[in-house]
Amino acid sequence: MLIPDLECVFVHVPKTAGQSIESAFLEFLGETWLHREPYLLFENTNPEIGPPRMAHLTSLEYTTLGHVGANEWERFFKFGFVRNPWTRLVSEYRFRASRIRSPFREWVLEHFPQPGWSDMWRHVMPQSDYLFDSRGRQMVDFIGRFENLLEDYGLLQEHLGVALPKLRKVNATNEIGFMERARTQGLAHGIRGALSRRLAKSRVRRPADWRTYYDNDTNAFVERFYAEDIERFGYSFDS
Image (cartoon, rainbow, N blue to C red):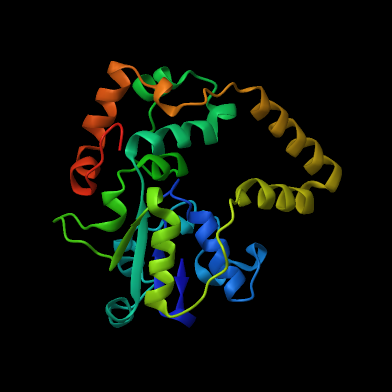
């Protein structure tokens, strides 16, 4: 999210409360989610300018793809949030469970998204890929933690010198998707589609504790695939 009015850039790592943070900034700016495009928050079909959801630009892509000039990048305050890789992956699975239709173990070990230009891949990319360059240099000024969300959100406001709205849990993707479909395909069709998705999602049984999703093999997969995140941010299975 590019916020010129506050001279800052939010590098949105998926499944780290990013939409809640984006919505808070939009509210502060007097904007709504439907008028988010000027802040680089829109769906995209052109790989030359960024990923399928522009909100998920990496820190490097902001400059290499021409969205922020070199001087602006140096001057602007850049920040992002990270999350325990084990809980983040379960959150991603729950988010897509009604479409994946595979048990967690099967999805991780047999159908895990592969590198490429897809929203699925962006959602499971190592978090380090968003916030560091290929030589391991940190590209942002502040990295908050999902586990300390409210405290770090407060530190962010202190640095920017503004009082942002309280964070609210946001599921804007479904809301906006419904509204856009209702506009383009007819209200009745949009309502039927939204209801059917919600019903399908409600049938997906979700264990209360994220730990129950893991066995030795899936735990080992996370340790291997997200090794850089685990070491860099000091995470473990239980922390």
